[in-house]
Length: 251
Image (tube, rainbow, N blue to C red):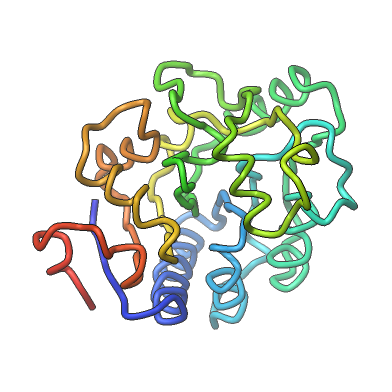
């Protein structure tokens, strides 16, 4: 894992977007197409905005897969990740090929159908974040590090659900769905490259736990340390609790 720390979230977003665009351009040049996975949430907004403005990315050659989605939430709901990706990535970039998670469908059937499509070819780059509880996608602690299923149905813990309220997607925790469909940990790690975008002070505790604690299902995103082609982008706030060793890797 390579870690870079930037002064603020906008500088972070620009650097992460340059890295992401470079991976996509190189993959399209080498293979004629690229498969990507994108995360959602407020922490990803500046990054996705910058990414869609990067020059020289042939989005017509890009296929997008969806990282996670709430079970039972209609796609017109403000918190729908399908709505988020359409508005913040698919439409601005002009991506024509995308596979979104149908949160209103039968969860096992949705997982099976998407998993079969995903198995056709490897993911070239996955854009991910880290949750306030250390989750990776919607793999809350204790995360399943063993399943080989590409997509799984999970029950969200209270810390994760409170984060969604804190970010303004729901008014109360009672409104937040209790279940979600998520790409599994092992499937995320199958991506050839991973770009993790983690700004903001509210993520500092999770960043410290995942980088300087044990690699453990209790800190799901700690597993990123085992992936050699992961680049973690932090800002000064999210890196505030790291030791001098990691803090020295500032840009």
